Image (cartoon, rainbow, N blue to C red):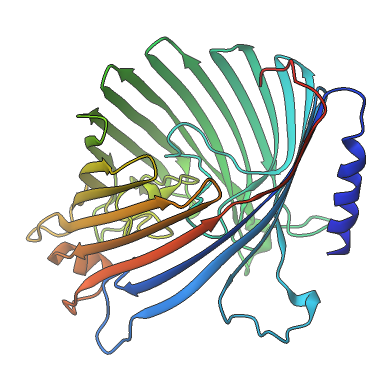
Amino acid sequence: MKNLKYLFFLLLLLVLEPMFAQFTVDAQIRPRFEYRHGYKSPFPDNADPATFVSQRTRLNFGYQSELLHFYLSAQDVRVWGEVSGSTPINNDGITVHEAWGEILFSPQLFLKIGRQEIAYDDERMMGSSDWGQQARSHDVALLKLRPSLSFKVHLGVAYNQDKEALTGNLLTDNNYKSFQYLWFHKDWEKWNTSFLFLNNGLQYIDELDPSQNSTRYSQTAGFHIGSQLSKINLSSNLYYQFGKDLANNNINAYLFSVQGNYAASEKIKLGLGGEILSGNDYGTPKDGKNHSFNPIYGTNHKFNGLMDYFYAGNHTDNVGLIDIFGSANYSFNSKSGIILNFHKFFAASEIDSDISKDLGFEIDLVTSYSLNKFVGIKAGYSRFFTSEGTEIIKNNYDGNRNDWAWIMISINPVLFKWQAAESTNNL
């Protein structure tokens, strides 16, 4: 905590620059109560539902000048009661969620380096996963090129080790070893498109024969397309995945999705879409081939149902997924609204010759209310209706009710804001 105090005073000194400068301090407290009775997996017999309150607490410092942008986000994530009230202060669990500096070489060229969130397009392949209280950030060097206001190019590079060393050292904490990605984005009047290429390296460790240790790379390439046509909003994703998985199988997998949203009135919006992620036949050896698509760093809670039965830390190297979904969004006023989502799931590959590909049905209901510009409340209820296919791939045949309820309060005050002059830099 002492280091954070020193950094705070340093940032205060920076705002005294004679050129344009802006300094902000804001915070977030986000407690969330959850009732879990079959969340992520069918509820087992002879078990009690889980109830708890988790909380994210953040303190954020931001600084901008004509030459430099700087951002620090200190974060504490815990479950109420996880840490005793008498725990010594040096065990408080505070971590750094983001800590980056962005150097402005010119209005068209930037270098953003340090720990940072990475989110592109609809976050299907790379996102911040903000629903998770811990969220997701990366240690990355990111070169950003902007030839025009409608065209952007990003090149990101990450390389991870678990500690400093004098000789060779391998990452062993289940994190990725390295990645490199290239992202292009182009805007037109009513359309936009992005291209992403990601080279992702996972560490393979052979404890019996360290000479076999290696980094195995998979590649993902594809497009995101979006449009706004009068009252209709359309979007689509198409990605292909190849290279090697961690078990050294050859990957040959794909993702395709299309979605449309229609503004029926000022208060009502309707949506319909579908998505397919390729997979492997259930119980069949890969024999050197893996057809299961993995949305590696996507915000997966946003897709395929809020109960996270698929791809939220699970379902990889499995039968894939076909998701047919729809939504209805009603706004009571500018402060409150309600959303109803439904999903019908099928396996993209065979479960068994005499087993249907049906993987169940999910309904999600979410309501929100803004008390003021600093405080918002959200609550939700979801129900998952399993099928025989769900029971097989989740290895649970108990036939219990599966539902999940939650309520979350977000408090986001701006504690301090100081600005010396108006900026001429359009970022």
